[in-house]
Image 1 (cartoon, rainbow, N blue to C red):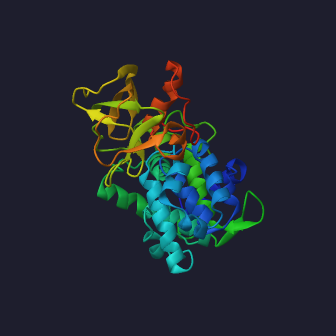
Image 2: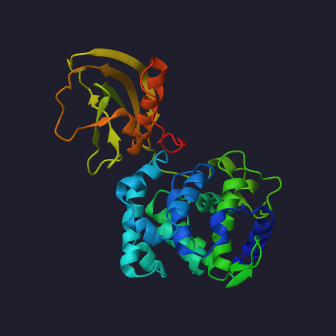
Image 3: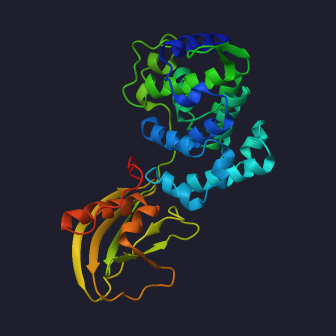
Length: 363
């Protein structure tokens, strides 16, 4: 199948099935970049409200760069993978220092937190650069369409799919009609169409093969290999960890500390945490709030027990802990698991649950 034939079929499908998303109505690289960072490992239905809040609170990259990291982390709360928020803030400062948003693939790739896929997506969407934004949807669509069983998580697999994607995008027209009205770059349409096609038509499970416009060309369909493609060589080992959180109440105050550098929850706040050790012998009334609370991360599963300690004597804690009024907890960004702790406090007649950003992600 020639690249022109592929693009012809794909563009017709996109005209009828394109997802109407707010960042597809702009060429502003700041808003496009923001959407791509938010949507890394986040579903569109989850990330939409966050994107809208970010652009309302910080309409320009200069506004975002001038925010504090705590403000950005608090606005991000609930999305998970908090390194994205820290990288976003750092990259905003990089862009401001440059004096403009970088407009070449190489320069975009230098931004903190921007990998090959994200750089290609921004370059094609905002600047019309003909580069394929190869993500999981690309791997799935191309592996099935061409019957490629080279593992996608190997060096040779990544090179194979990147080369194929580049051969398909290199001849697309510079500009084409947009499903949303007006014109758009051919590179932008190509990448957005493959993403949407993989997300809604050629899905991981139960793809819509019967009404697929590529059904006659699809090797996987012809050879009954849809379920076996794409191929992955390695499987991630998932470890289970057991932890204990203790929410300490002392005369209207509670103790929290900030997670340190190099941590997945770096910069976020939490109450005293204990792992693989017995409970401390603190004076006061200790109440079990919940046990075995399951929290799933990418490479690990956390099983947490929640306790509340009510005491008139502040326990001795490491120097990095601070004591704050309980009603001020809402000002601090916390991990999703700590939000779940806060949420059960009212069930025991304790403090009102601190309300932060909408909790939409299990991260």
